[in-house]
Image (cartoon, rainbow, N blue to C red):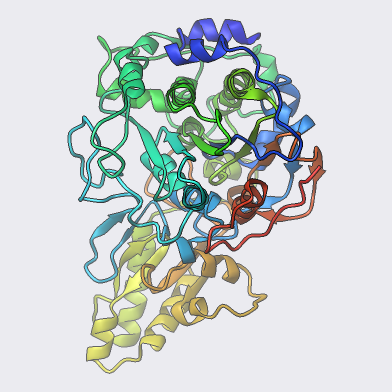
Length: 549
């Protein structure tokens, strides 16, 4: 379906999009010139395998602009074990794994108090214009390293770093400490920053929100872009383990009288959320004059909808398949607007993801594969019983935290039990669990020497000595620790979670072609730093990729 037809279904674009579309084309930059704007596009929850599967159905100017005319690293992986949204977003522009960033999960337990810590939570700040919500994301206080944007702004304070996302962690972590983050708010359908960044929104943000773009999607229909036979490679809507509501067409706000918090939240699992984020990104380009002078800027755009779609209905589903086709057309329009507003030869764009996705376990079991769900409480109860049998009455297992388990070391000390003995027995018991591929104790995780033990290197990179639990747990391929009975998730060191797209487009700086050597997502930050002519972030663990023309 041509993009104009999709556009009519989505409802009118924000005024900023119209402004950008009307701009005259900008001449390409001079040879050797730095990019005026670096655009990072993070598709939340898309694996390399899923993105490549539908390549023949994409248009020429969305994903295929990168796949056919850009640099495509076909074996790009995260190195850490607990592959979740916050950990991935923290890695991309710092070049560091969780053992350095301190972002070990979306949330975790404080080792001393046991209180829940949210990755971007900060009680010292609040979201502008919105009621306070417990554990709301408001600042990068928990991010322990500098980002590419921090280095860029330190080198030239004229440079701007703007990040926007459907999730607070998808904006705050790429923005780093010196950038500015804007997040979609499911309470109101508006975009907002926090008092960490400013005391009041600039006029362009107020104008964008005043137009109520989320409200204009009420009643919009999400229809498949292609005929039914085009989705034959994906699972039928009634595949086992799929959550309700995964069939198309869908009407936004169906059964509701009008826009409200539940409607605004429901948009997140649809291409309309991506359209809103991209519209806001357009408004930021115009409002902040990004890419308009010789001080390079960074725009990070995290597109969250695919993660919500996959959690509910799985990456094998037809609705997930169609969502990527919808996103392809939205990205094509956004890139064409960038061509006009900034200049095709003056910006560098990167597409990647924060993690991949496992298929729905029941779907995999129906295909004869070993897969399943394991309630975290079941594993904890068996561990507790085993430790009590060895060391006497407990409790010994304090609970889960970021795919790890805290143990009662204080109780062990009181009883004269060596902490390493407690850890070792916990590891032995966990390895007997039918859902566990591996488990590692603190002594294994603290050692940074070379290892050939399966999963140990990934576990070390996901583990932070001051924040993480005593024992780190790795699920078996196809198995998930979850209390949900439908849908699916991510968070393992297996290829379906670590193997994500890494695509770059910018002919002045990037040589086109597919490269099959294994690379890391930690390589993005030092590579962009080299192109921008600045130092890599100080905690970066990556290397500069071979992309020069």
